[in-house]
Length: 143
Image (cartoon, rainbow, N blue to C red; front, side):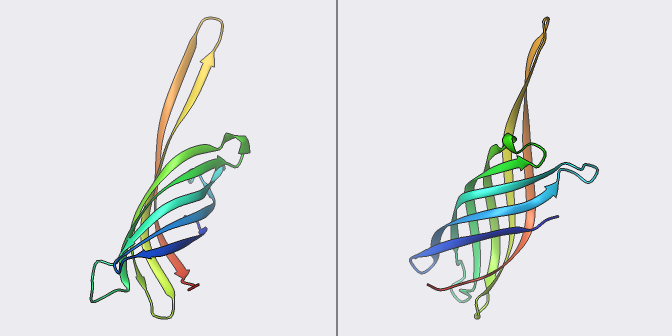
């Protein structure tokens, strides 16, 4: 469990589709419940598309996103790992500007480690995938 802070800017493309860019920061969270190691995610940029599929209910939307993120271990800030994020979600925009979204985002990355001594050398790749379900609460500012 954790919190994230972010923002998006959306541009209407026709009456049904909006395209945009966003950024977000996921506050530190534990690797697992038995570990003291924490990590955080910085997603400096992602692209998003939002579609209003129901003409009679323009406040309902679905959205998808793809972006680049850095996953950083709090014990070694130099070990930032780049990853791709993919997200999908649905939401509702209230008339007074409040927005609620239910989203799923997946982060996938590979790490490489090596070991060498006088007799033996090995290289290992580890693939990781981390998915989160989130309830986003936001406010829409009109510029």
